[in-house]
View 1 (cartoon, helix red, strand yellow):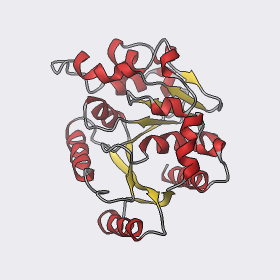
View 2 (cartoon, rainbow, N blue to C red):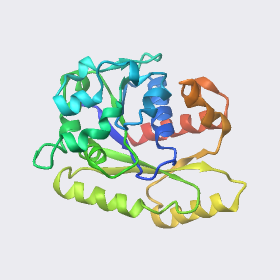
View 3 (tube, rainbow, N blue to C red):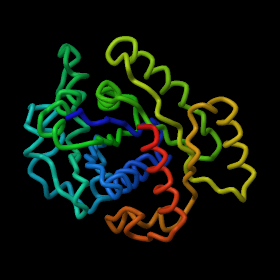
Length: 258
């Protein structure tokens, strides 16, 4: 059995649709009969709550795997959808930086080792990591563990701000820790074709990153914004909405990459 594909959804800027993308891509890939593990690496735990899981009620989390070497089998949480499983976050993830001192050489390898466990490598086709909005230790762990990254970028001013810094960080990781790390694609989010701003940002991204842009774009959509508060992916909360159709399209595009 081949090991799962591991992809991180990353942008150190907050509010760009990163968690929304992770949750809805995971749901749509699972709907297409892929066995999907969503790894919530963000201390805020929004990906977990977006799947209807309250992290405050859990005994074990990803934190225990990273800090104490807990067996992932004891932390995995089933969701309402048979092919979608969650490795949940904990607010304690915010302390990982201090609990794994800089002198520990394997501190950037903790997530990679967790995902190499037989429980994960033998039971999933795809692992999607929702990284925190920063370039700290947790995000570096995600980059070291991943085959490729998906970069959500909102169709607003300063869309390219920080993208260069993130690509530089990826290059550092590629040089020393993960030589095969790739970019699966840049995803335009919060797109509104009626505004010249959205169209200008799209043209800017096409100019600089034409080879990396997904054809699918994610629209600015009220239903998409409402869905997380109901603990459901958009494809369940409002299956006929433009947001649901966009993420279904993205999942098809991603599978073509595979």
